[in-house]
Image (tube, rainbow, N blue to C red; front, side, top):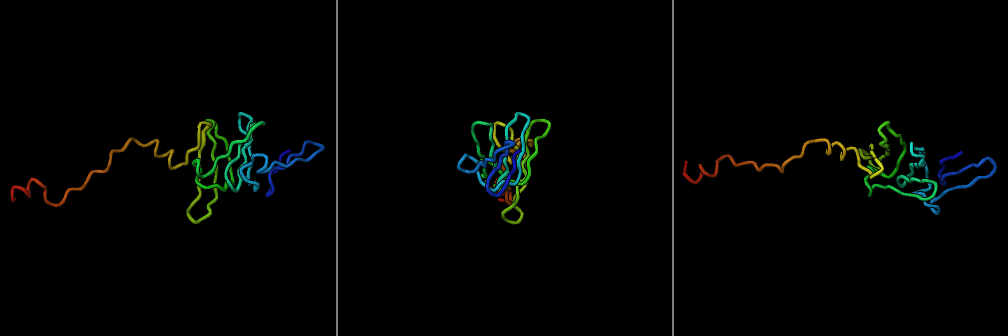
Length: 138
């Protein structure tokens, strides 16, 4: 059994306890959520980002990698294989949902922008008088 604690992930084998911490590769010792995905990888939502453990090695994802915030309180895998991470704001009106696929993390605003058609650069607004009108003295 695995337990997320404020001192890492405590693992009980049935007879012995072992604790995984930052020294082992966990991104942060304060663990708020845990999940095993459909590919049997362990995910840990911590105060410092997300840690993924495949049984051999760790990968960490933080705000620098695309999370909305580092404090991850909730995780769920959707039927399409995407992973949703609920982050808690350190400041008011921050935090939100980050969505990940195995090829990388993207925040929800980035995903929405990807769905919109390409936009051209904003057009400059003309002044009240057309430049041709101004030259002709009209």
